[in-house]
Length: 215
Image 1: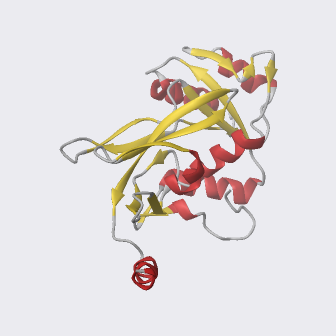
Image 2 (image 1 turned 180 degrees about the horizontal axis):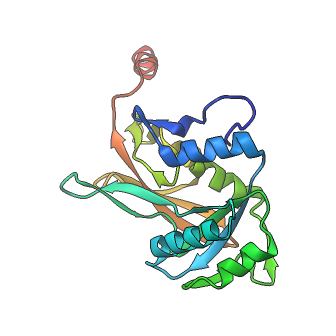
Image 3 (image 1 turned 135 degrees about the vertical axis):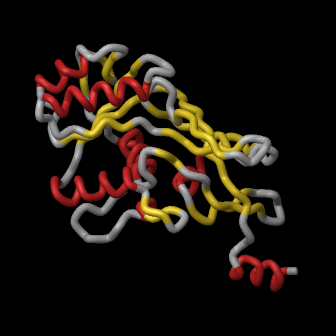
């Protein structure tokens, strides 16, 4: 998870030599404010981005210091062109020190809102593995970039860096043609599948030397 009081930047702030502004924003908020709570909302599918902007505007007008997070992922098509897609369809997240009754009222009256998780009568901050998974994603900001990976002699994928590294034990399927993996998680009281993209890189020199010694 991010390190709010140590002064150490989370790994995802600098990704591919560039500063991820959304990760940097979360990092500074955590350093200044301390522990944040995260809440999951279900909203209209394919309306997540519009809902996020609409809710951010309403929070700002009400003077609420609450972040609205909509996770996306970068993938590449068959022509090697990058594009973005929602990571979790229909899910938007809130990050707040405290979600008061007025803030809940604002959310519920925002167009295309469906419900809080667990339910509108049982609103709970994320905890346990749900919080762990969301924290890992937040290390790389709202948009999950391409991980850097290669395959070993047994054709097992080895991730050098990137968001995929936090989910190695949860890989359900590898699509080598499209250069993406499917992650399977028990999350939000359901089984959730989502894809993350990767780009092939050369193995670490230490790995190559190890293979030469064993051959």
